[in-house]
Image (cartoon, rainbow, N blue to C red; front, side, top):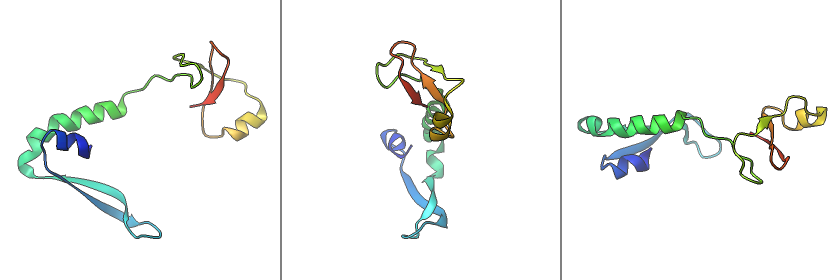
Amino acid sequence: MYQLLQEAEVAALVKTCGPPTFPFGDGMYFQLLIEEEDTANAQATVEEFEQQRTARSVVRCPKCGTPDPAPVSNAAWWKRLYYAGTNLHSCPHCGAEFPV
């Protein structure tokens, strides 16, 4: 976001905030501050960034690059344990299984 604002010639300042992290004590979160006069210029950049951030990307097989692999519905118990918290997908073209 900072680089996009710099490209749009909007002066921005990045500050840390929130609870401190160990061991350095910097904040866990960041604030991006701009001048009030630059709000109109920054609005289009912020909207574009938010649209890119929330847009769903196409899942591709890491082995062959085939788009939209199918989710694995009945994986072995050890795969469910190993890939806990992710969705396991299988490529219809090459048969590779990978988490997403």
